[in-house]
Amino acid sequence: MSEQVRVAVAVIEDSRGQILIARRPQGVHQGGLWEFPGGKVEPEEDLEQALAREVWEELGIEVRSHRPLIRITHRYADRVVVLDVHRVTEFRGVPEGREGQPLAWCTPDELGGFPMPAADRPVISALRLPSAYVITGPCLEGEQAFLVQAEQVLRRGYRLLQLRAPGVTRRVYRSYAEKLLELCHAWGASLLLNAPAKEVLACGAHGVHLSSARLLATQTRPLPADRWVAASCHSKHELKWAQKIGVDFAVLSPVLATASHPHANPLGWRGFQQQVEGVPFPVYALGGMTPALMERAWEMGGQGIAAIRGLWYG
Image (cartoon, rainbow, N blue to C red):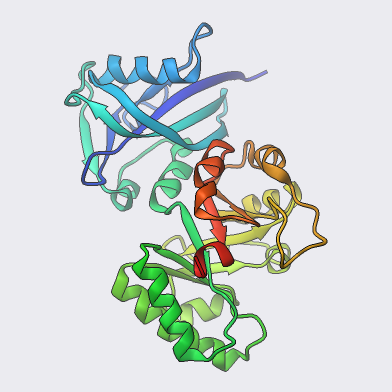
């Protein structure tokens, strides 16, 4: 039976939004690779104590503020590693490699250029993704009104959007996508299309969002690694299928009751937590979400929240 190791991981972020990584020494498990600081949780410790101790021992800094980012279970040939990853947003002191380990500060987008353990890959995705995933509302008032609403969303600071637009023709959808993509480029935001993957490549969008039906009809990852692949999930089975095809993230719903789906049976927060436990990619909570529920989503293991009413019209 494989050894199971629980590890407290600190993703340390400075005031410029850069992330601290360290290189593992040669001769140890995964030696020579870059990693996020942290270490094994000892039997007498809780996660917070282990996080503070490891960061102090490795870097000589004091953790002042942190929150959950993602929890990952990864199976190596000789062990099972459970990573409890927390984002450290405030610390006291200047980090230094107290064990002689080289350190580097880099942006989330630069992390992919460093050789890192396979278990850290979902952490990179979580760092590159924002906490809010905006799903566009219906295109009922015409293209111009839609684009005005989209710009208001971008002005509020949201940087990840999904163009849903049900019920429109393919030609109309393409027109909306092209114009919304121009806006997203101007604001430094990413746009995913809820459409066939070939539409993403045709208009140059940042990724695809698979409906649950399209997800289950997909056998392999539909886009290359430089584009986002996301999926809508409603069950553990769909989350496992999303893992099988190699999605980057998912939304799980409905977490709470919604006016748009009054007969759906909501998961509740505990149900959401149970479903995402062990899922090796970031998952947004969807269904009844508002910005006020962001911290609750983090506490329950979510990347953040996804919403139409709570974000598009917020």
